[in-house]
Amino acid sequence: MRKNKLIRIVSHNFHDYKMSYTMLYLGLSAGFGILGNKFGMLYLVLSFLPVLVWSLLWFNERKTTDTSL
Image 1 (cartoon, rainbow, N blue to C red):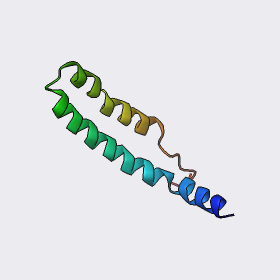
Image 2: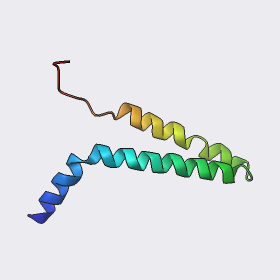
Image 3: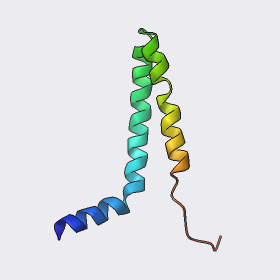
């Protein structure tokens, strides 16, 4: 029974968790991008991480069902 409650809480707050992890990934990609500048090819690979994160955020926006607006 406790497992179902945990799953319900996590799934209800998934959008908030996704936003905080998105900011974490953007911060990490910026830091790794600065470090990767010294390594050339690594910089090119890591520079696409923010594009991937923002595209995931863009296409996975939570849809609202409120049609009264």
